[in-house]
Length: 195
View 1 (tube, rainbow, N blue to C red):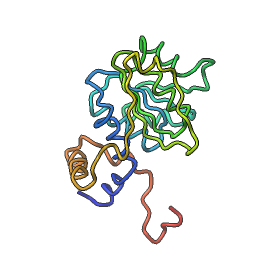
View 2: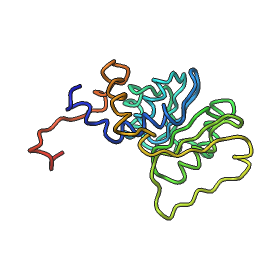
View 3: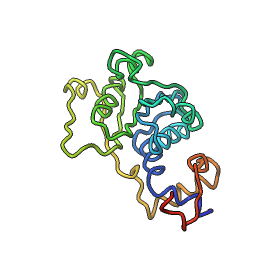
View 4: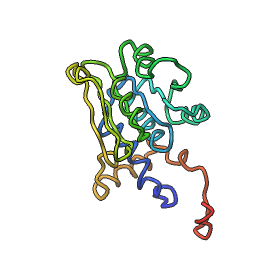
């Protein structure tokens, strides 16, 4: 494996990819919402694509990220600023009651709550990836749990680096995971400060 490519698996890509594949585990043909389309969110979309999700809805406040996110499997986009109601309601309307899985990659506590509240009653699973402010509090109505929604958290996508990263590298070597599209620039070590 070319080290100048697989080195980027060490944090964000594995975190987002594993959040989808290892934790959310979207069934083939399911609908997944990804909150935040930075590197981790794009990796979560990639994981949903690899898992066989049929709809991957990217949620971000920055619409300039939408076109790039198509390369990672996103099929639709929602900018919460474009709506005068909570984004979880928008997603529920788009998906006939809620998405099957959601992956939150922002660290914003409101996005975390929205990601949980947008999953479908009965089987929806929300995965929190972003790291919130130390004083943040997660508040939702208990009925959201009683209605059989699941809330999970993950660190590094539930990968164990020593034993699991070789399998992620193998995904790349088999061309199932496209690492190159995550790389925007290559600079020599001498220019690390510029990078």
